[in-house]
Image (tube, rainbow, N blue to C red; front, top):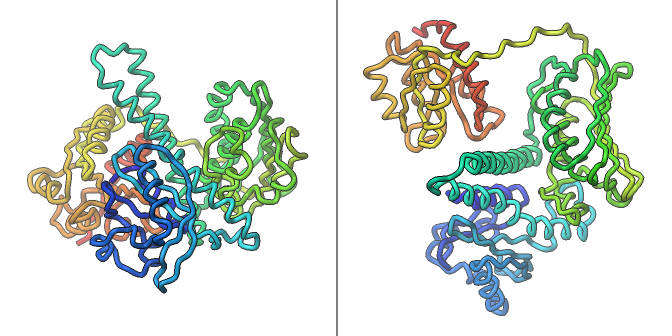
Length: 497
C-alpha cells in the first residue's frame, strides 16, 4: 500500500470526501463515498473509465488537471460529477501524484458540510473544506519525501558517521510526524463516531506535566523560545488517562512554541484551586483574532487562521483536546486579546483523593536475559527491528512471518512467550492463540502478547477474551514491551483444562 494513499483514504473517510486512485489513467481503487455517490460498485468501475462520471463540458479541464498532477503540479478545479440519481453536482476537486508512483483524486461536494460544529455556517464550512483539501497533499508528502531522500543518503558508500547520524535522526523525525498525523486522524474518526475512549485511573498530574515539559524543551530550544514552568507543589491526583492528558498538554505547549516569535516566552502554570487543578499555557506570540476565537476548538480551523504563519498541520489537535478534556469531566478554554497579543489556554480538571503510588521500577538493559521469544508478524521490517531490540535486552528470539510458520516452530520448540501481530493475511493472531490454548501442556500455558495496528477501543478486550495475556498497540514502545514480557514470563499461567 502506498503510504500517502493510505493516509489520504483515512482523511477522506473522516472528512466525508470522495476518493479514487490508480497507477495509469484507469482508476483501480474507489472509496465508499465514491461508491455511495455514484451508485455503481467497485467491480463495475474497474471496467469503466472514471471520467464517465464527469460532465462532458468539464472533461477537458479535468484531463488537464490530471496531467498536471502527474507532473507534480497541484491545483484545484470545480467540476460536475454524476450522482446515483442521474444528476450532476458541483465538486471541488484536486489530483495528487504520490511519491509511490500512484495518483489519487479527492472531491468534495461544494454545498454540503459534514462538520457538526459549523453546520449552521455553510459559507465558512465550504471555505474550511476547500482549504483542508489544499493542505492534504503537503501534509502527506512532506514527511514521506524527506524519509525517502534520507534513505537514499544512507545507501551511499563511505558515508561520514555524522551524516549517517543526521540521516537516522531525520528518518526518525519523519516517521514520528507521520505517526502523529495518523493518530490524529484515527482520533478524529473516533470523535465523529462518538467512540473516543479513555482509560481512567488515579494519576498524578504534576508528573504528567513534567514529562510534557521535558518533551517540548528541544522544540523550544530549536525555535529559540523561553520556556518557564510554574508547577505548584502537591497538585494532587485526577481520575484520568495519563497518555491522553499528556496528549492534551503536549499539544498546547507545542502550539504555544510554534506560534510565538523568536525570543518569545511560553509559560506553563499549574495550581490547585479548591477541588480543581488549573493548568494554564500562556504565550506572548501571534494571538488569536476575535472573530476566530469562538471557532478555535473546531476541526481544521488552523488552516483558516494560521496558514499564513507557515506552520503545518491539519488543525486537529485542539478539537481532539477539547473532546479528551470533556471525557475527564474537565473544561478547556481559550483567551486572547487579539493578533499580536498572545494567548492563554486553560484546562480545569476535578481532583480526587489518592495516596502517592510508588514509582515503577525501570527494566534493566538485560531484563530479558535467556528468555526465549517467538515473534509473529507478516511485516519483515517489524520482525527485524523487534528481533534486534529484544535481542539487545538479552532475549533469544525466533521469528515467524505467518501463523503457519509460527506453528511450524511451535511443533519443535516451546518458547517462554509469544508476541504476535493480530491482523495478518489468511490466519490471524486470534486463531493462533485459540489453537495455543487448545493445545496440550506445556504449550497451552505459554503466555502471549497481542500487537495491533488499529488501537480500537475493543481490541484489548477481544485479545484477552481470545486467550492473550496482554495487548499493546503499534507503534510499539520497546521499554513497555520489554516490561510486559518480563512480567508475564515470571508469572506462571494457569492451565485452561
